[in-house]
Length: 232
Image (cartoon, rainbow, N blue to C red; front, side):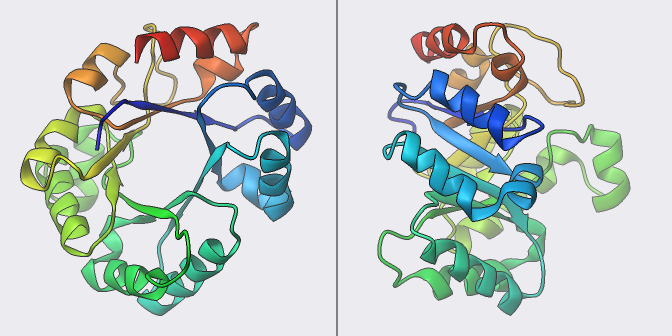
């Protein structure tokens, strides 16, 4: 993909009111908005409608990381796709080829269906913690998860910037990589272990960078977004 790297902003503030106030400040920018577990469980579908009401051109990434038996995942994917509000959502690659293929088959005929990504390895993992669960190094297993995802017909993966280049080499340059843990100007990494800056993300052919705290904790979020967009 990577014609021009895209910015996806995490809406992780403690209330819908605070998130919507942030979005009002950035409503004139060409950005994606990431709605995760906390926000969606608290604020639901109405919050997605509220975002589109601020700017109908906003693209929404619903970050719920679906993981269940294949039919249950496909049921959820179908509901999300039929909202007509979500432009991208995700599943866990470790759910397996059958589950991912079932999801893609279920939504294939839905008009304007969302993009679907699969999570390889959460960016909160370091290699030791990841290996304790999956019995393989992050780079090796993330690439295998990506190959499984690609073969399932999924549009791309959620990974760290450190795996993006290798994943594209083992799948396709058109295979989307979306990378959390981006600290655009060297900010504190917080609870993320595998963080990267914008030049590193560009060098590794990342398609979407996800930025949260450096934007929403800033005294001037609009200015931070402007600076990020200038650099990507």
